[in-house]
Image (cartoon, rainbow, N blue to C red; front, top):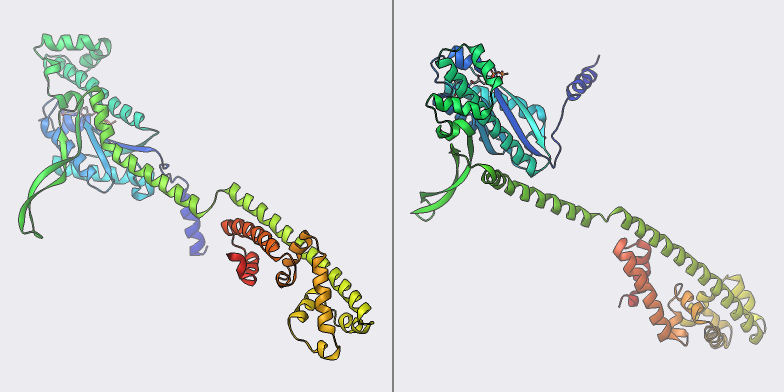
Length: 430
Ligand SMILES: Nc1nc2c(ncn2[C@@H]2O[C@H](COP(=O)(O)OP(=O)(O)OP(=O)(O)O)[C@@H](O)[C@H]2O)c(=O)[nH]1
Ligand SMILES: [Mg+2]
C-alpha cells in the first residue's frame, strides 16, 4: 500500500470518533481524582479527615493551574477530589475538540496536583456541553449541593469511625438515616455541622477579579494606580441567587461578546450576499428586462424596415424611380438613411435634390410615427431625437424608462448590456 493511501486510511479511523462541541453551547469540564479514596486513606494516612486543608490547597492550586493553561476558563470550582471548569461562551481553543479538552486538562491536572501534593494523583476529565445560561447555573448549583451532601456524609462517617464503628457499619448507617438525623448525630458528638468552614460544605470557587495595583509607569516615570486581573480563591461562596448571580457575572461578558460577533458576522454576510429570495427576484427581474429589451430591439428593427421601405417608395415617386436601385441595392435601412441625412454623402452629388428630398421624407415618416413606435425606435438610434418632432416628450419618456431599468439593474447587477446602452447614450444618465 502506498504511504498516501495508508495515511488516508489510518486518519479516517482516527477521525471516526473525533467530536467537537457544537458552537452556541456553553461548556463545562469536570475532572475527578482517580482512586483518591486510596490516596487519601492508604497512601497518605496522615491526612486529616474528613477534610484536610493541605489536600484542599493542592486541589485549589490545580484549579488555578487549569484556569491558566490556555483554555479560556472563567470559573473554577472544586469540592472533594473533583474540579469543574466553566469556559468562556464561544471559546474556540483547539477548535472545541472534545479529545483535546479531555486529554490536556486531565494531563495538566494530574501533573500539577502530583507536583504540589507530592504524591501521584491522576485525574479523568469529561466535557459537559450545556444549552443555556440557566443550565450552567443549575450545573454549578448541582455540584455545590453534591458537595454539601458528601460533606455531611463524610462528617458523619468519620465521627462514627472515630467512635469505634467499622467502615461497613458507618457506611450502612449513612444509608439508613435522613439528613436531619445526620445533623442531630453530629451535634450529639459536639459538632455543629453548619458551623464548619464553608469551603468544606460548599466547596471552593476560583475566578478572576479586578484589583487596583500601584505600579511604576516607565512611560510617565511615575508611580500609578491601575487595575489588573488576579485569580481570587473564594472559600466562602455565596449561596442561592447570589451564587447564580456570580456564575452569570463571570460568563456574561463572553456571552454578550460572542453573540455580538455572531450577529455582526450574520449582518456582514447578508450585506455581501443578498438572501436567496432576493437573488431569485433579481434574476427574474433581469430576465424580464432582457426579454423586454429584445422585444424593443426587434420591434425597432421592424419599424425601421417599414420606415425605410416607405422612404424608398416615396423617394421613388418623386425622384422617378432613380433612387430605388441605389438604396435597395445597398440594403439601407431607415437608420442608414438618417445617417445619410446627417452626413453629406456622395448620393447628393449624383442626384440633384436627393438630399433635400430625403430629409423631407424622413421627417415626414418620423412625424407619422406613433409615440410608442418613436420610443421603440429610439432604442435603436438616438439621432431620431434630432429629426423627430416630439423630441422633448420622447426624450423624457425614454430617459425615465432607461433610468428605471438602470436603477433596477444597477441595484442587482449593473449589467454589461445596460452599461453599453448608457455608454452609447450618455445624456440619459442625467
Ligand atoms: N482525608 C481526606 N479525604 C478526602 C478529602 N477530600 C476528598 N477526600 C476523599 O477523596 C475520595 C473521593 O471520592 P471519589 O472520587 O468518589 O472516589 P475515588 O476513590 O476517587 O474513585 P474514582 O473517582 O471512581 O476513581 C473520598 O474517599 C474522599 O473521602 C480530604 O480533604 N481529606
Ligand atoms: Mg475520585
